[in-house]
Length: 172
Image (cartoon, rainbow, N blue to C red; front, side):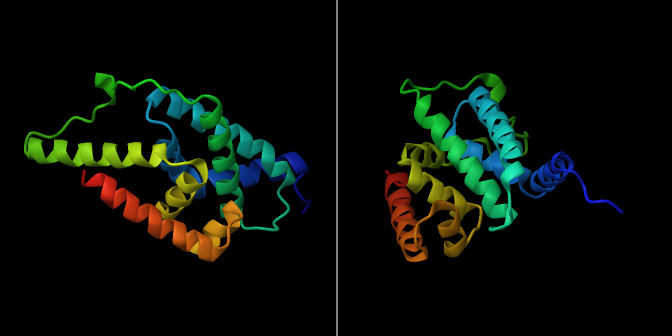
């Protein structure tokens, strides 16, 4: 049996990464972009950057850490470069239909709360946004530290402060 070529190995790693972390990348993109078209564009940019980067993946960190590092670096660089200060309006296609049996008021309140939290997260500076999005993906402080380059203690402090800020801002 022969070893896969460099290109085949990269393709295999990419397929493995997307199978394991594809849903997390979609959620991550939602933390950076409110607009559906921009989310799709950012996700595509992340996929391209990830595929390209896997040629240099030497397993000095886990594949999960590598994927998150590439994704966050790409998301931060694109969101800083293309930051749109104008208000974003939602198209009717962006709304999820609510079943008739569901209490419409409750569903709208829950959606408003989620939208408010997402807007607050998008307003954080890039490193704080990265920390809280990784925390929401259930990474521990050590894993977040590995992705961000911060110390685990600094990550834990940031998570605590960001949670407190989101709670305070979310109740206003």
